[in-house]
Length: 146
Image 1 (cartoon, rainbow, N blue to C red):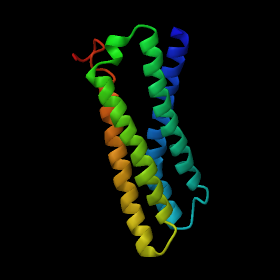
Image 2: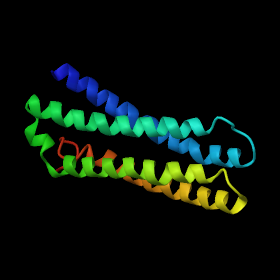
Image 3: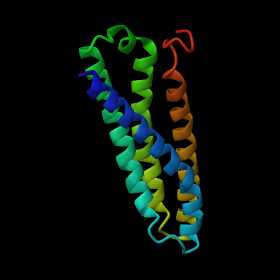
């Protein structure tokens, strides 16, 4: 069970990092897509959707496995519960702000510009939430007092 827990943590981190990196590339892809380039840029949104859903699924799996192997004190503390809540917010931002904004960018010029601005807002919110979750990972683990 501890090996499975370690594997789930590694996948959780991998999918969080992949979402973050893909989101960094998205503004440039949006500009390129608006000018007629980057025909496959929509695949990045699909990969981001998958990454963030798997990120959250592995976060929940970490909690379940951690509770089973004796990390009750760590997983029932406020930093973990706050992170789980923020992780859900990040999933919702991806699915209900970033993805629809990207889809709006294929219309007329006004809709495309509105979609681009909403996309930038969603990515900014997502990166901010992601960074707060990242800091919360270290609270109470002997690195930052909890």
